[in-house]
Amino acid sequence: MKIAFICTEKLPSPAIKGGAIQLMIDGIAPYFAKKHSLTIYSIVEPQLPAKSIENGIQYVRFPQVNYYNDVVKDLSQHSFDLIHIFNRPKQVKKIHHASPNSIIITSLHNDMFSPLKIAESEAKEAIQYTNAFTTVSEYIKRTLTDRYPKAKEKTTVVYSGVDINNYPLRSSQKGKAIRQQIRNKLQIDEKKVILFVGRLSKTKGPDLLIKAMYDVIKEHPNAVLVIVGGKWFSDNGVNDYVRSLYELAAPIKNHILFTNFVPSKDIPNILLAGDVLVCSSRWHEPLARIHYEAMAAQLPIITTNRGGNAEVIFHDFNGLVIDHYYQVESFTKCINFLLNSPELCQRFGKNGRLLTEMNFKFEHTATRLESVYEKAMKQK
Image 1 (cartoon, helix red, strand yellow):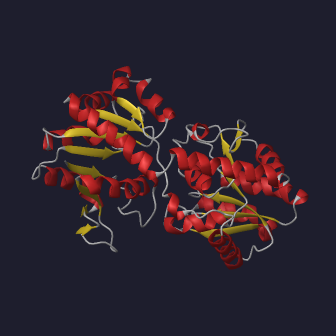
Image 2 (tube, one colour):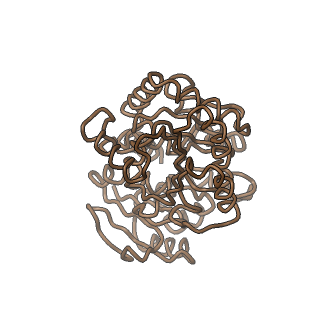
Image 3 (cartoon, rainbow, N blue to C red):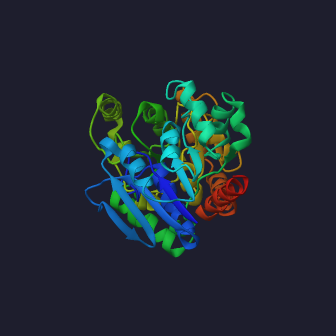
């Protein structure tokens, strides 16, 4: 089968600049390339050629400014059995017309059917021309099917995942060595390390964690919050919000460490250096992939009951789920509780790792996605 993946116009593929969609594509592409002819479209990037073949996968890259028009033109010159459009239902109609005999799969990684993002007429056309939808969480599925019930029979949840081989066990010799190496590098050797990993945006809530640290360090004077991320994926620029974080952290600067952007390939090592991972999202998070990564790294997780987060983090099993996500005190209480409970942290970490091994490896994602493909092909 000839398959085309159409990546979004935001970041390149492979995921050299990060991005949940790009990382998912990187994870599942090898499985499809073994059985099928796979072409991946993405935007150009100075570090990458316009066209290349890597590990049996053909990459075609176009400038961001006219990206989808270039993709459509290229599609019309080929014959794909199946085209998978990532997170851009507004592009479905034109892609269908460029390749009318192809099966169209549209995956949703955000609330892309919000009336703020797509007109009702465009939404109905996207549903008409899409053979099957996949969503990264039950929450995102509801954002589609509650508005457009006709899409329900076409929609399947396909969770993302991780490459478990990139996450050595904490108890292993390799895991211990990496943990010590990273802690030495960051000069946090003897600290209790709370990790935040994500973009430095208000929706992600790192300001809540900095505020929480003012009280955490009263009970745990050797605690440090390590904030991993930049303003926008690989962009370490400073805007008003990032500047406010630095100012907020200044009075307790010995307990707050900003690393800036860390490449996705290095995240597993960073996670090994931590003791607790906190996802402080205020917004309706589709389902932040840091949860999968932290579970694979055997970290206890504190997350917010927003969007799809609580679909993989189960309160008192592999972490703690906060309902009052706007209250600094909620984060303070949970962080202190876990730092005072090393045996519970270990149990949460082990449970999370087991859950990942059983359900959230990239091979699980690829297998579920292939099942959707096969069903759509049969129904054509």
